[in-house]
Image: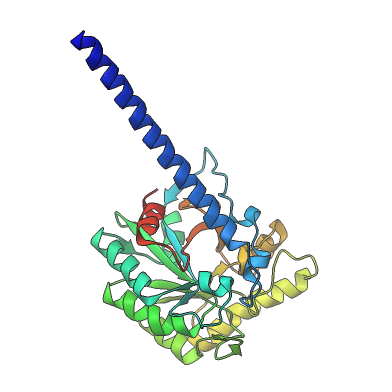
Amino acid sequence: MNLFKHRRFFTVAAFAVAAILVSGFIATNIYKQQRLANISKNAGPEHKYDKLVTQADLKPLPMSSNGKTVKIPILMYHHIGTAPADSNATRKDLTVSVENFEGQAAWLKTEGYTSILLADVYQYSLGKFTLPQKPVIFTFDDGYADIFQNAIPILDKYGFKGSFAIITQYPSRQQGDNLYASWQDIAKAYDSGQEIISHTQDHFDGSNPKFSADFILKNLTGSVADIKDRLNFTSNILIYPYGHYSANYIKLAKTAGFVMGITVHEGSRINLDNLMEVPRIRVHGNEPLEKFKELILE
């Protein structure tokens, strides 16, 4: 009788544990879907970011069973600071507070992560770079002034470096509530060891058929020339505006000299045989630290 009771107890306990695990799995997946949906929900002034970025842009990329892959969380940020009081949902979601960003950097440091640059991934694909045990990459899109003012001091504090994607015709421009960093600030960051990469000359949507091949090539080569003129080095890494690209766009980007193309597809597993479609993990403005940890560790 006692044995029967024990068996029934363990059976009930096993079902309870299973129910908890299933509930956790469902909750995690619901959260992921909410994260993806949140990106494409509210159109705003940030280059109409949320209007143009779709669920198809965000879905994980297929991995080749024969290809060489590596897991590296590439974090995607836009603004670091405080969103203006009258900001819409888009701007708020694109803005990570200084406190949250420092909390994320501090946790990564405590957990033993080492920051690398996007160029290091390319060198690793060639067998010319050795990855640290726990690599992480910080990427910052658009070149906003608040990134250079607020993110770099925190990166420096924790011994990290970042990759900064510049819209090369926008430095020092004021666009609504957005102020873009000056070339002087960008050069200072580059001289201190930060990575500067292309985000095109004017943030055009490279997948839009209205743009001719001639325009695309001139814009991409122009962005490389702008960086060369200002910083005296040649950038060969491109972050696609809105994460949009096409087979023809990739072909033209390669013609312009680019060896890597960074997307907005969600994920941390990189196919080293296809570095023109590199996924990232977008960090939202309201991302709780516990959820940030889950995104890094999953």
